[in-house]
Image (cartoon, rainbow, N blue to C red; front, side, top):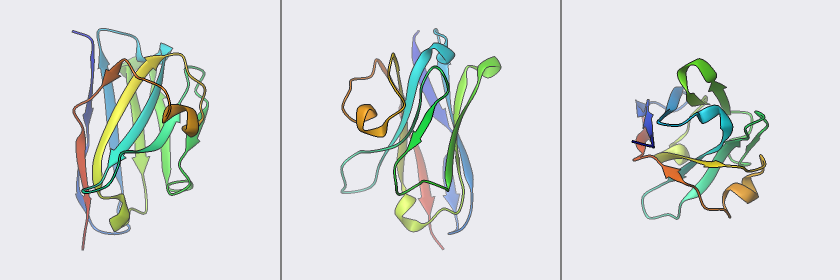
Length: 126
């Protein structure tokens, strides 16, 4: 079955860190353009970060300097390391993958993705 599965969400205090994982089954993640999105309660989905097949990266302004996207080829996984979390980061985080795409957030938010995960919930609260 071709799919991606997210994991790593949880509850943290402001200033804390989490690492989200997006693992592919049935296809090689390293060949795909991958993006992380999030949707907070009552808000529209927004792009967070993306990584091209060549490992170029881009980030939403709201997370630059705090989040890092990376790949682990051996584990067929893309990670999103999130540091210095705040309440505005509370959301369900989704990863998506597709063949082809340049590492620009504006592109990631405009194109269709072949694979979407079920989401992992992140709550930042004191």
